Length: 258
Image 1 (spheres, rainbow, N blue to C red):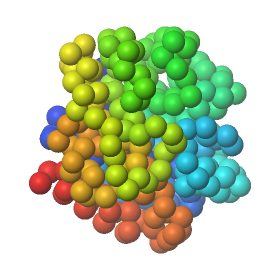
Image 2 (tube, rainbow, N blue to C red; image 1 turned 180 degrees about the horizontal axis):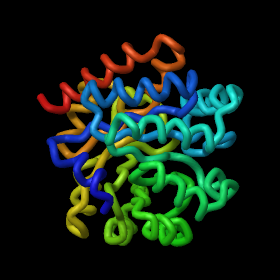
Image 3 (cartoon, rainbow, N blue to C red; image 1 turned 180 degrees about the vertical axis):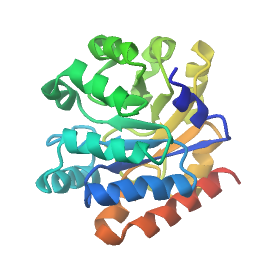
Image 4 (cartoon, one colour; image 1 turned 90 degrees about the vertical axis):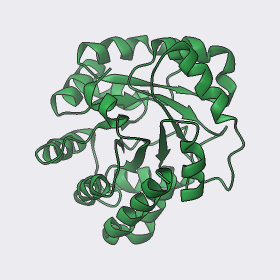
């Protein structure tokens, strides 16, 4: 397991925010990373925008479109991470799609990601059975390929957990990412199946947006992941979003520790 990812879960329940790189700009994305760390984030997911993000709802799809329209590229995101790493050692993972990695060159992408100080990778469109080609290269460069489990994974959870690295991303709801008014999945049961197979942190994502939901999910899991609610703030406040996101992260982290 990557050392920084491991450490993210060693100080109580981990809060993991997601942001789309380059929305509203890469300069603001960099400021957001520092602000979220200062507000209590334990690990940050950096989304590399993709033109056809199949797992994403409209909020993150629109953020990807805005970022790509603004000229964001993988190389420019790598440069931003280099800049962040001059001042911060917060654990960070990329979340993107297989096509982004393929088109850059899998070996080149993962080697560069490791060299600039990234800790892991999430590829929501790569099923467990097809992860080998990415997983092997991730391991070579000391990156954790984060496994996802969904409510429909029940019969496969043990197999996925056995090979999982870093943490297990528990998808709380069926469908795409986005804010949900309530979460009905039995997260406790999913986490229990993982832990029976391997002692690895489990973080819950998809649909969590309020402090109350974060508090509830933190009772069952080791971490809570929030994306759409934060990306909505970036869309609403644009260049002025940093203090709003900072306060939101602070409120979510506070709720999880109550």
